[in-house]
Length: 487
Figure 1 (cartoon, rainbow, N blue to C red):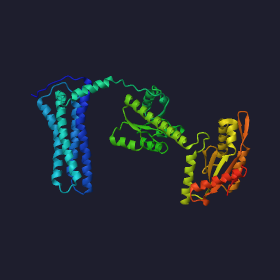
Figure 2 (cartoon, rainbow, N blue to C red; figure 1 turned 180 degrees about the vertical axis):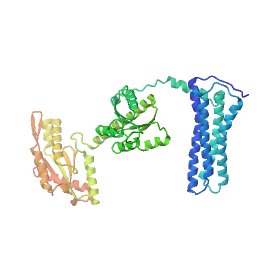
Figure 3 (cartoon, rainbow, N blue to C red; figure 1 turned 45 degrees about the horizontal axis):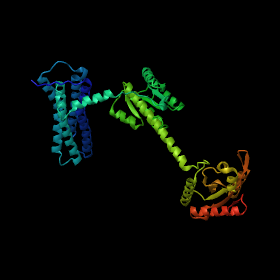
């Protein structure tokens, strides 16, 4: 008789231990299938005919997994019988599980021996790995049989303390109070549920609505497209099987105009296979939920997807804000010194590549601006600077560039193709500034502007061009101000 020593374990810990025992089998078993496919691919490429041996190993894997799953279902959990079995019956179970394993090992060894000189080193190594993994499965089968016999002392022997670890894990799980609480920013998020089953939609809608989420439903693909076109939801729960358009095609359609960051999509299906899940993720799904849905997992994944979406949105807003701060003059709202000088360098680079025609640089400032500050204070001066920038910005449109480069000085880069007559254009700028009246407190402030213009054909680099424009601005000041000098 087999000697069976029983040891009490909590139900929760025993379930965890049972999961570990099964994983000890499934992990190497799945890996064998993966390595076998790699070997098969290599032998096909090398034109080596070993189809029979490969099929024998593959068949052994299938039978092994099938028999283990059947035995696991029969002897564990609610299906386990309380009747004790004889040692012979346990030996028979052990033998039946080992039989396909022997085929895997045997045919792998045959391939190594027969094709040692023909197979590449990687394939030989993969076959040896299959044998090593099979030895691991042998140990996993022993553990499984010991467990169903009732001998779990081996899991608490001081060295491989799995039972104690399982008890500790179960206690830790029990100590965790898991509740999903939506952040305020997620309340009212718009969820589109796409499923042809009315009951499924109702259950999902009730579960999510109770958490403060707003739900819409679509019972077919056509309606789903209409709903998205009407208003893009914050998240879509999309069933794979629909009466008109299947979920994968619908997913591809949505991804043509909506990124996964902007509109996350969680696929929902009873087809819980690895390939199906991989294809959904590849096509742009954020996540995957198998049917029947678990309410806790559903809510956790919905909240996680929404949090990622809103995090990305906040991240983009922050990036945009930082970009504006880095490129904009904070007082006037037009481009700052760095941007306008970089644009000038870019214009020269494009000119050398003959990507654009020639251009002009206009250097301008406000006449007698010191008197404005002395008379009305810096707040009055700021008001004048803002008015100057707004007037110039209305007249100097993209692709031309306008920026404030410091104090009361402004710089513009004007492409030849955008202005027919530079003299007339500059006069228009001058007159518009002179006509403008700046209201400040009880005062009406009138200003004028002077400018110097230099053409790209006059210089070979931006520094020289700026110097020429600056010199002509100085000449405009000496000429009495309220004038632009072009040459």
